[in-house]
Length: 320
Length: 207
Image 1 (cartoon, each protein chain N blue to C red):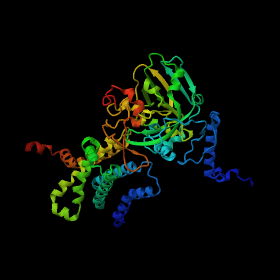
Image 2: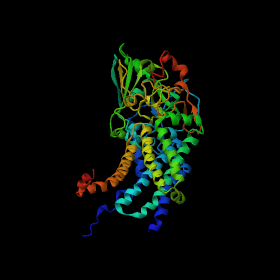
Image 3: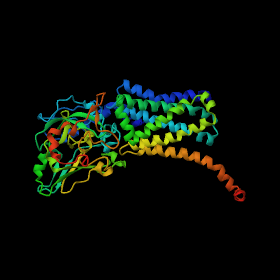
């Protein structure tokens, strides 16, 4: 008769919730690490500044680059808590909050279209495709704010060369993952999903154009477009598509998400240009995150010397 | 109970401001505080403006007359947050760059309507005192019908500034439509009642 009920201690009373959550974070990070490549070494950084665990493995053997600016870097907190990534929510704070949904392993990227060597790459293979470089670039958002970000990645041209584009390949279209479970912002009718972007072949081949897999010495946080994203520093930020699953070589200028939604506001080229205003706000100046006063916006975001020749003879007011 | 209605509403209206001050000291206004403050004060201004427009329909529907005591205060808080919103833009964002501000107001439709709404709020705030109400008499009511225009411009301002996520401005627009629709219904109700109670015959004979 005196049989004790075994279940009068709830599991939650045994394990404090904090520890439990920490352990879960540890497991997530550990799993991510176990799955990741040998090129990634180093410790678990559980307590990130934003309080969000994204398995911040260090990236090893990263070279410096002459393309880097020596401007003052934005902090990791600024870079990882103030994001435009509609797939993880429309407000700036949403992506950091929803980052936990975006699991990035397994992950593959299909290279297809007008190429001789179509192939689906596993992310680990992509990360080892070319020597990783740190590229400290200015990022200028179309909303007139900017940051300086120490990206880690490799030139997109490395992937293009391996794919061996045919003579018909004039543009490249990029496609983001389409999975509302991992990208819950896709449940909202904000943009047409999946997100797509495109570059002209010469823009894609330009040495400044990189595929980024990390920042601040670590693997790319989900809210910044993990596991692999484009970075085109002389164009407005939305051109640098995040969480890529497809790279398609095409003959005609491909669709680009914002351009499709509001063609009179977001052009296909979307080069940073202080002389061509967005219809709803000026592009002449910008606020560098962390600074109080606005600063003047530079033509091609300050990369004119390297890229202006790509657009020689083009009316940039027409091809904005 | 009702003695506390006004002070309670006063304190509630100060909560957003308190959040901002707290957020400033706890460094919790995002990486771009100026943009955050602009958005925050703007949406609270519009929210409280819609609350002030809820007073009259609420009173008509429930017969709860005391609620009218809140109307002026809500209107003034809406103006207060709008003033903070505009000052943030003028001082913190553009730092008195009046050339840029002027260009914005003329060239950017969302700023044109937002600025117009703010300017139109000024005479309403100025004439909100008991003395002014007495002095203006009937014209006070006519002047204060401007609040409908202000609210429409405010919602339009919000709708035109968002890039893709139109949910919130559409919600505000829907609420405003209901609130303005309620007023139309109150105006039309007596006419309809008359018609339904068989009076149209007399109307016809009059014509």
